[in-house]
Length: 134
Image (cartoon, rainbow, N blue to C red):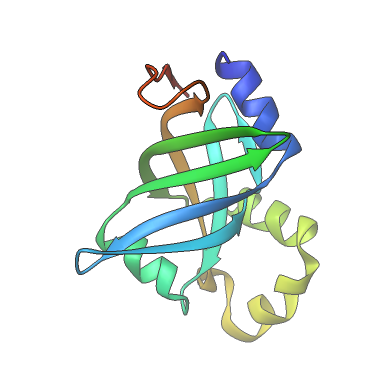
């Protein structure tokens, strides 16, 4: 897959399994993506969650997507985004966040951008992996 195909795959299959590390121990959870485009992949979390604390301490992550017998891995470094327009768009797309924002303020919501490389895993074990810059 090329970059466009990878971003399209993620957009059509927005739930991936995001891996972080804390104290040299892996932590994996299903995680929804907000947007995937030429600028990177945007996710969001809240400051009270363990994943936020893990990302703040170690921004290196990997996300694995699976659909239609295709496994796609994306690895890279995240950066937090402090952009009010993005936060408002996220809350519009995920209205369950509105009461939390009303109670805790906008700093409660932490969008983050993943820039890195994507790789479709296929073929027999040991086959070369073709990592694509995203």
